[in-house]
Image 1 (cartoon, one colour):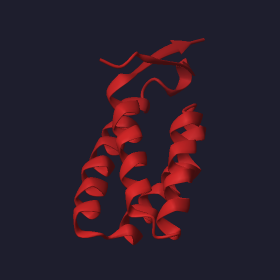
Image 2 (cartoon, one colour):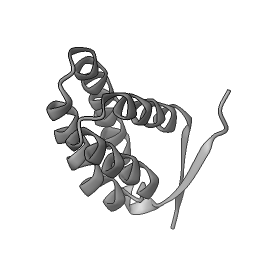
Image 3 (cartoon, rainbow, N blue to C red):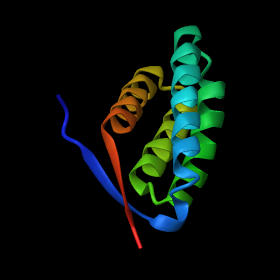
Length: 101
């Protein structure tokens, strides 16, 4: 079992974080399906949005995964994309949000 990833986030975001994370889980499913069909362009599009948005929610590490994933998809590196999607999945599965004032 992986260790929990604890992230401290401003309490002002408490109402919107659950929806943001639920959408990221949907993205995970979409990316896994796209990986099966070799559609790196679809993964790249999701990763681009993730790289741009995750930091706004205080999830800088998730944004970094998105940036790396976007880059490997642009380079056509399917195996590396698969590894990063696995990291993404692990991150979401082990994420624990702590809200602070």
